[in-house]
Image (cartoon, rainbow, N blue to C red; front, top):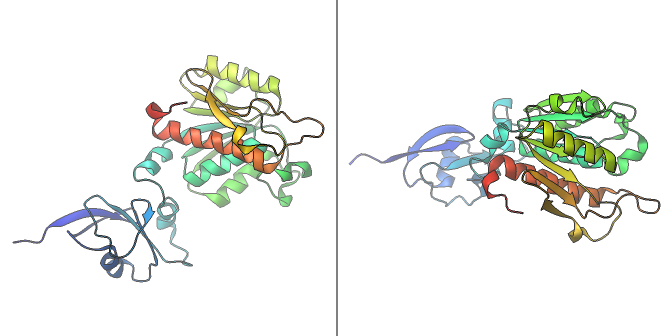
Length: 275
């Protein structure tokens, strides 16, 4: 009787192996030095038996992988099938301050294929308490500084920066390709303008706004709600920045990660987003 064969993926390349082969035996055949063994997004022991269609990633700690493997290894902890959907995603980020810079960094780390970045401002010292920039970025346009940050996080994505003040006339054109638009402005009038303009000019796009994340109060008050068929708001919807209550990295980061997490859900499985 001939030996049964199955097809699995090893570091994103199809490999034919014998049915019943263990992860440890595969490691010895393919990459003997690997000491991180990931099967279908989860670290596993070497005695795990492999099944047809498994996605395996073998990593050697401390090794700098070749460019043709690095992107796959960066996505190794994703649930199978997620990376392919995220790679096709196009997300717009309006404003690159505390919310927007953190949203952009999170989406770059998960591998969203194209990020459209818009801001008119430059990096100043007071931004550094909560935004994803460094001292060396002071004085640079935020769009340029953000691309610099993101390229060092994930150089395999497409970044489309727009150094511009967004308004009702240019917002639809700049974000015409997005399936998700994330509002990350500071002022209430700017937030309202963007959401209203996007709702009218980008009817197919999901819109994720932010409202209420100042200070250092209760983390659990920050939530994401549905405010319309395709409109969502993240924050506590109350605590705006004011004298004696500034914007700080931890709480702004919670709201930003709410926005980024919802964007991932909308790109991967929009039918099952329930809020």
